[in-house]
Every structure is written in C-alpha cells, then in structure tokens.
Image (cartoon, rainbow, N blue to C red; front, side, top):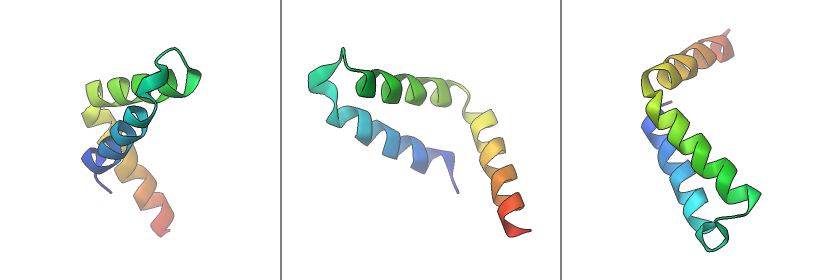
Length: 56
C-alpha cells in the first residue's frame, strides 16, 4: 500500500467538504492530510509495518 494513494483519497474527501470549512469533517480530513503529508516517510513506514502484520 502506498502512502501517496491514501493521501490522494484523503484529499478528495476533504475537498468534498470545502463548502463547510468550519465543520468537523473538513477540519479532521484536512489536518489529517496535512499531518500525514508532512510525515510521509513515517506514514509509509507505518503502512509497510501494518501490511507485514496482515500477512502473518
């Protein structure tokens, strides 16, 4: 699983809520996207670790 693909999905989701930028849905998705983008390497490492666990 690639971090870029999941981030693209998060971006699509927060864009759907742009009309309500004061809403919790928009804020949660937007800030999750920003944080995960900033920590892309850590996010990818986490995804790799979770994928390895799922295979066991």
